[in-house]
Image (cartoon, rainbow, N blue to C red):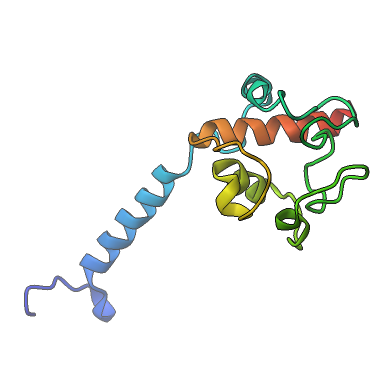
Length: 139
């Protein structure tokens, strides 16, 4: 048997064990609170509020983020976006928001947004949950 333990039909127990280890690693990589907490997100969003509004449709240095969730990227009326964001043909899904919040300059090379990003996955999940919650409430 060459050192392999085999079940009926030639199933290798090491492959089963490896699959279980990979599944466990993937599960551990996802934050326990992947959905995020909008209350915590409102607190984290304070870092963003120097340049962005989340409660009004008025723009500051950056565009209003009141209706950003699932909106087409660079589509908010009344704000002139950088060519880096304007060239993206996608929407601000939770996944795209997460990637952008992690490293804006890597997500959209040439964006004018100078923010270095939110490194903690739970902070990003919380901000995304907050942005989704304010949109649902119609604030």
